[in-house]
Amino acid sequence: MKRICLIMAALLVGLSGLSAKKTKEVKSDLVGIWQQVRNIEHGDGKVNIVFNPVLKIIEKDGTFSTMFVNSPQSAGTITQRGTFAVQNDSLYSETVKAHFMPEKIDLTLPIKYHFTDKEKDVLILEFDNNSGNVVMREMWIRISDKHIKK
Image (cartoon, rainbow, N blue to C red):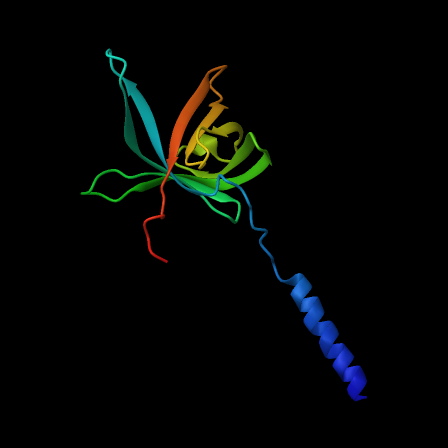
């Protein structure tokens, strides 16, 4: 009888473990916090990088969000949230689950990407913003925590 109770208890524990929701961790160089930047070219051939007040957070759990950081006097604004899926080493897609523009909700956007440096801290995104055949190009720089002592 003890043996049967022990087997039943083991089965119960095993079955409850199977029913528990498990999140699959995304392993991608895209995961991190990114700040949007743009190049400003001067007539003398010099190029300056300007940091835009836009952040993109790509999480290990397959979610992302984009936000504006308005100014030191006001709070930032989350502009969209959703999920992402990596197809290969140069293409991923974002599916918008919440957006400040309701017509963007449930939109799935394929995005081409590549890194411009070996550390993978500069990211170029290219996508059609669904306004015709206009390809948008964005540059993002990873916000690093390398200076934090762990």
